Image (cartoon, rainbow, N blue to C red; front, side, top):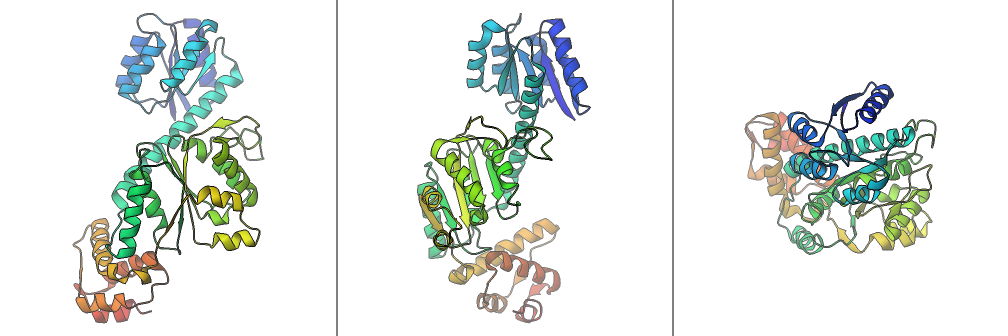
Length: 387
């Protein structure tokens, strides 16, 4: 249920707005306030997903309401309601953080489209905040091998810039971890970090996922929808497994990088975006280019900075630290005490061929914690972690 607050001093217009929204969807719960002061009081008491706010009002005008509301609950999108003479002010409110504005008298289609888009953006922002909290707790760059120290040094140099980064490496090496740390150490760290797994999205849907779509663009497009690039505006988008992206989607990504513009599927309207792009792949993109499967011009746009994440077999000295890290992490997840691994057990694990890299090591550590003794021994490794 989306909660919408209408702040409008003209009773007739307020009633029309409430009626339109209430009849549009059972998923909208609409409240109203007759002036700016009342609107601020309501916002302090209740949580809302969207505010429609008039600009010219007694006691407190819409600009003041917007400024005050952003201090109280900055994540709530505002759509300003402007009379003919308020258009310049309406445009200025967008610089103050308003999502959009609509003119009086409100056009039905324009109103409903703006409301849906604002609610979609709010949903994406909330999802991103949840992701950021999860990321901060769960992503940690563990290890002190020369290979990992080199990556840490690169991150420190590259993160403060706006340079695009292409991260390469085998599956399970931790490419997404590098992307998260680049973002968290960047000036965009408080803005959205949007992750897209290009390999997990069907080729016919990837463009809609990245750039959004308009209602009717295809059979299941029942409403306008913002894409990941819009959701990442002013922040970072991480295109994981970009080597699996279709050539048509690659062309659109290239345009977004060249012009800082995107257009939703089914629309010819340009939308400006300010997005930093990180990409990752386990493929040899130069070979993909030679095979006609990847655009060379896109490769050069993405690969301003290249970071190669080493395989676990190339950083075996980090394995004892990683085992301890995973043991403590898994114990915390399971609400139990962390198990100790004997030196012989650790030495045996260091000698294994880790084709699945860090992901495989974590799975083996979890298996040994569950099936092994009070102290995980060499025999436990031979029995339960046999390669």
